Amino acid sequence: MNYRPLTDVWILARPKVAYYGAYPAGFLHRARALLGVSYDDPVLHVCSGCVRDYPYRGLGPNDRTVDLDPALAPDFVQDVREPLPLPGVWSAILADPPYTSEDAAKYSIGSAVFPTAAETLKRCCEAVRPGGRVGILHYEWPRPPKDWQEVAVVAVGCGRGQRARWYTVFEQIGIGCSTSTPE
Image 1: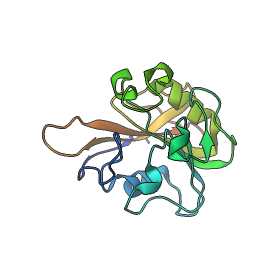
Image 2: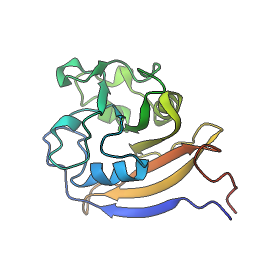
Image 3: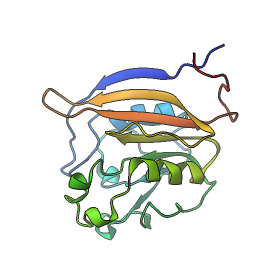
Image 4: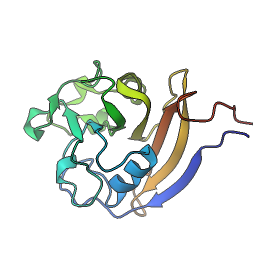
C-alpha cells in the first residue's frame, strides 16, 4: 500500500475574533479532527493569540496555550523558538505562528522574535507525545524533521481577494502511521 496524505480545500468564513491573524470561522474543529484527538485530549496551541476567544467549537477543556505576549494571558508565556513546555504531555500540538516578519510586526511583541515555520514545526515535533500529531497553519509548507511525514495537507481560504494558507498535519513515521514511501 502506498502512502498518500489526505488533501482538501477549506473555504471558510472570515474570522469572528477581532484579533489580527485569528482563525477563520469553522477552522478549529476541523483542524482538531485532523489531529486525531478527542475533545478531552490535551492539545497545546502554539502562538495561540486569542484562541480562547474563538466563538465556535474546537477548543477542548484540557487544551493549553503558549504565546510570548503576556497580555493575551496564555498558560505559558514563552518564545516558541525555545523548547516547548511539558514535552510528552500533549496528544497533539496546533501551531499558528506569524507567517511573515511583516505579520509579526503587527503584534505587540514585534518582528524581532519572529519564529519561522521550520523552527516552530521542529519545536512542536520535539514536544508532542509519541504517536501524537502536529498541525501548523502557515503560508509556507514546512519540511518536516527526518522521521516525520504529512498525513494531511489542506488549503485554507476565506474569500476572494484573501491569501490562502496551508494547514499541514504531521505524524512521526513508524508510530501510528504508514511507513511506506510515496510513489
